[in-house]
Structures are given as structure tokens and as C-alpha cells.
Length: 254
Ligand SMILES: CC(=O)[C@@H](O)[C@H](O)COP(=O)(O)O
Image (tube, rainbow, N blue to C red):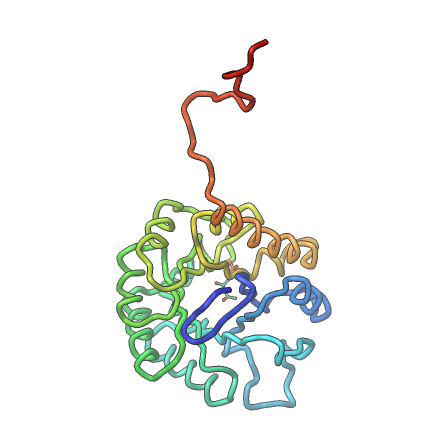
């Protein structure tokens, strides 16, 4: 069970809802993932225009915790405004803070991200903050009251996997709130690595929605999260420089 703020989730896989080839594939991929949390960009929702297309329309949204995100915001002020819009439309009191500082890399703006987190925590939201893999910033976000920190594995949509496993493990080691690796995941192997490093969960989108077979990949990601978590809890053997026989000969007389 994963607890974030006052919310509890069975699944440790958070799924994005954009970029699927069509809505039927999106629904099938979401169903097979067994996720509890779906994230979507508030800016892409026709929140106050029910007659307009809604890209969550095939999903039974009652079944999920919705995690509106502030994608597109470049300042704390914009992120706060976007979160309030989602909240006013009754979507959820949870929000993923995402404040982008660079159009080319889509890496987060640390200063504005911290400001938006402080403000939304003060306003009573459950705040999950997308951040870089900066160890000190993750600590400052926690001090600001973030209910979860979400360090990127690598740039959004890049599929490069975990670029800096050392930083990720340091963030996990020091954190007193859940750490959800968010963005840049490319394959189930990346997910297993993130979970084996002790992350509490993974948020991904492109690796599933843009896969050749999104439904199959969604299942693979679900299994990877479970496998990585089990491996982490089980405790891996230490790496040794030299071999140790798997069937020891000590005590055998012949
Ligand atoms: C959907 C969402 O919130 C993205 O901004 C997120 O960071 C996922 O990134 P990937 O598409 O790289 O998985």
C-alpha cells in the first residue's frame, strides 16, 4: 500500500493519459495497468465545456484518483492558477506541480517549482512535485510541504531511462515522503531499476502510449513495478569481486 498525504493506493504505477493512438487503446492500456492514479494536463481538458471532446471520455474516471498536472506552466503563478482551475471544476484536491524552465529539454524550473509547491501546500492541496534529480532541491521541496517528490529519470518523453541512479538513490535515502520517479522512462528495465533503488512508485506516459503495442507495454510496466518492488523488499545479495560456489563443498565427505 502506498500512502501520499491522506490518500492510499494499491498500485505503485501512475499513468499518463496523453499521446495514445486512439481512445480505445488508451482505455485498454489503462485497464490492463491496474493503476489507481491517472494524470492529465489541465490545459488540455475542456473543463468548462462539456460539449467539447474530452480525452478521458472512454475511461470510467470514478474508478481512479485523478492527478491533474500543471503542464504548460512556466511560472509558479501559472501553476497555482492551473491547479485552482482543476480544483474549481471538482476534479481533485491532488495536483502534480510541473513548472517547465526550458522548452528544449522540458526540465523543471527549480525556483518556480519550489514557489508553486509552497503556495499550493499552504492552500491545502495534496501536492506531488515534478522535479529534477537534484538531491538538495528534493529536500527543499519536502521541507516546503510536498506530499511526494517526483524526480525525473531523464527528460520528459525522451525514453532515456535513469540517467543518474546515484542521485536517485540519495533522494530516496533522505526522503521522508514518497519518491515517485516521473518522466523519461523508456522500458520495463528502467522501471525495475527505479523500484529496486527504493522509489515508492513510477509515473510514466510515453513509454506506454507511444509503444508499438501500448496494451502489452502497459502490462509489462505493471509487472516491472511489482517485480522491482518485490526485489527491493527482498534485499538483493551484495556484489562480490570473486566467485562463490552456488553448491558449497564444505562438509561433503566424498
Ligand atoms: C503525463 C505527464 O505527467 C508527463 O509530463 C510525465 O512527466 C511523463 O513523462 P514520460 O512521457 O517521459 O513518461
